[in-house]
Image (cartoon, rainbow, N blue to C red; front, side):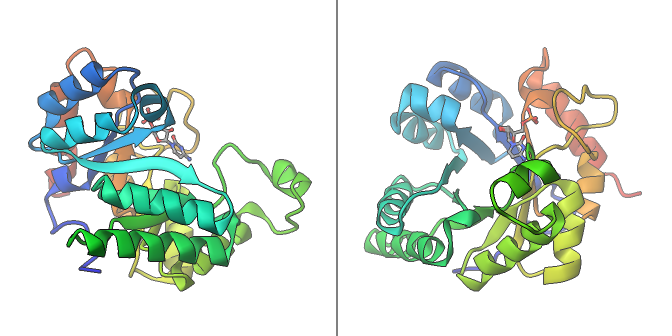
Length: 248
Ligand code: C5P
């Protein structure tokens, strides 16, 4: 594994991951053409991957995109290992697993991704962990048999993930602060739920602006609708970059 610090100071473009939450390869490619460069990172989730298949990844990479494959693997260790190896062979920059899959599953994902990447002479993709989905509230977590509070469970699962060799976690901006306090600075935090000042909150709770999210300890910001639903996505991106790159 190389250096996991995401970007040198001031390069806001290197900190943004645009969520390509669209349903066709054509729309996804057109967004990448519009935004890259200066942006480099794009997230492919269930919606696009299930609709288009792995060929969408190659098409986006052909346009210079680095891909975060957001499929949140969670299964028995052997199955997750096969999926992780396949993700590494696709050449994605990052992919993720559910930390509630447990130690053996997490280790299997990291090891299989490393082995597959090594066979191809590439560096291993970053493997990230999902702690507790932001849709959970305390009662819903208790109903799954977890007696801890959400905050305690987030920290405990993140600690487990890092102990198993993960590169980082997905976390809300509020959790980012908590995780930095408990677990330090030496891992990636990828943060959705970010909204530029003045943008619609959509269905996101506890939103922070991009600058606030970085100050809270985020390494990368996942931003979808504020960019992709804007009438002029490149202008929306420019506005965010200006905010990020302005010293305050
Ligand atoms: O459009 P928006 O900026 O809300 O997109 C955020 C992206 O991050 C979406 O792809 C969404 O699925 C994902 N995400 C999230 N909240 C989480 C985890 C992932 O919004 N807690």
